[in-house]
Amino acid sequence: QVQLVESGGGLVQAGGSLRLSCAASGRTFSWFAMGWFRQAPGKEREFVAAISWSSGFTYSADSVKGRFTISRDNAKNTVYLQMTSLKPQDTAVYYCAADASHYALTTTTNDYDYWGQGTQVTVSS
Image (cartoon, rainbow, N blue to C red):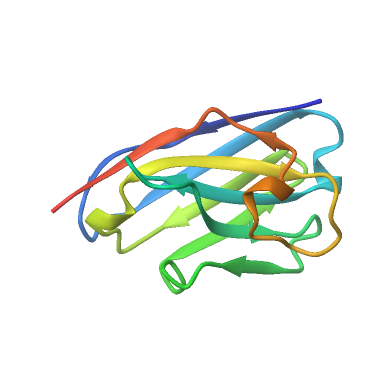
């Protein structure tokens, strides 16, 4: 089992920045690809960004490219999502997830095996 706990969400004005953290415990964190997803009210959960176990590969959704950066520190069992130039449409609950099953990065929700409880990000206009 892997336990994931997100933190760092909050209320921020448009154009501002936030850094989300996801602390992992349990099975060996460094073996897993990690991803960030988000879910706005009334919408399906959507992919935001993913990072390979070694940090050698990252991939981001077009909607956040150039604004959000995913990174990880395997020594601290933590993955981060640095968010800049935030927009009201970024408002959502943000979830981190661990993929224990696939070699290549995946954007598909069902491909991720473990999920955190989520952290709320609200961007005011």
